[in-house]
Amino acid sequence: MLKSTGKLVKGLFVLLGICMVNHAMAEVIHSERSLYRNILVEDKGDLRCLKFNVKSTKTRQSCFLKSQPQQLVFNYTKQLLTGLFCLLYTSPSPRD
Image (cartoon, rainbow, N blue to C red; front, side, top):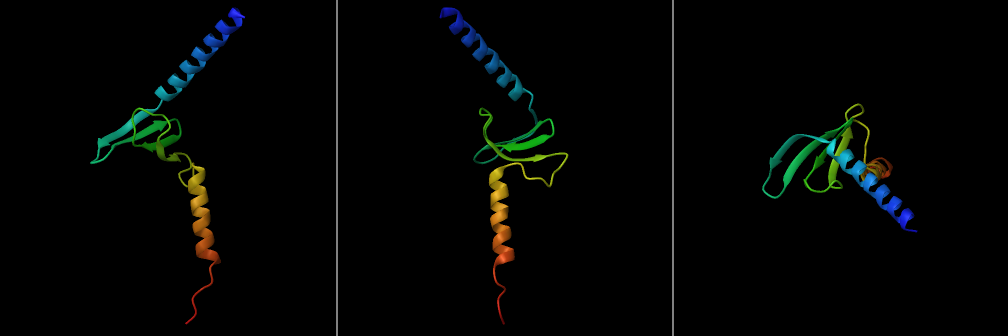
């Protein structure tokens, strides 16, 4: 039992190390302080993201793929624009 627990702990440390290295690979290409927040722009491979928090890895506000800048990355932006599209193109036109 003790050996399996030791293997589990070692595995968790390896996984934690991989996650930390994965985050460390993001390069900050621009940073500035605004009145309310710190603003960061990070590059990580083909992904460029805007962040407002330095300490957390889950605070990406907006991202785009440099190879395909027209493609939406986050699901909420896809849903938002789908709703806008439906509203604009399926509503009846005003009559004179």
